[in-house]
View (cartoon, rainbow, N blue to C red):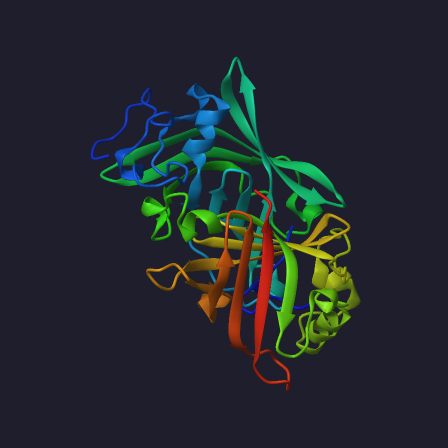
Length: 354
């Protein structure tokens, strides 16, 4: 199938004094958010002392858990893995994992899904992370002992993370070495967050969108946007990513490149912390996840820049044609693919989901 040109394909498998333990800002309107309609990005406190509504504000954000490393492996192997980041939006989460054994994705794995805040006596005891496997939603991890503090303007989170499934069972070649206590800094929000009133393009663009139309200057339409994926498998084979049949792990049916499941619908998730996630679906089942970074390209918020790929080697800019509370249309100009057809302009139209 065609892809947004800037997207990197990633396997499914984003106060001046230290707050006290009993202090929570989840219900307090922070003066720094006075001009913004976005969820408070400065909420703090112990999640175990908060309601689900409060806790969603506290965990809201992208948390930097470590750095990635390059891998020289030539075949998929089960290895020790590390977290790069975890991000919570109002509705979902994503995990960015440094997985050296995933040679077909440059050593990066992304897990995406919904989360559940479990309460006892109206206080949150844990967060359950879910993802989509074999056509259904599955609980895969629990997060507990969560606390967010602010020191000299920097927000930090601490928590205990436990996978409740074997990662190999969901297609990620990682050992069971990631269940431990973590601490992480909060990534800055995209410029425009603090001034995003309900009329701003920033406020409107953040959320989940369903692809509703597509066209390009080569005659492409929404009707032929979702193409057969068999060519991708041939490309992987030609590139030496797939060398032997036994290297194609059949235990995870959400790997589009290996299992060649053609998509028939797509979603785009855009967060205020500079993450975009493109989701490919087949019969409402999630079969592909694509992830990268975005930021505004001008003060008028009519152009946005996107990056992806190892070292952010892929980049492009899109011009917004129209944006409302319910619809988003943008165009990429002079996009080149690895073919002989030459550059093209591509226009995407999305309808707001949430």
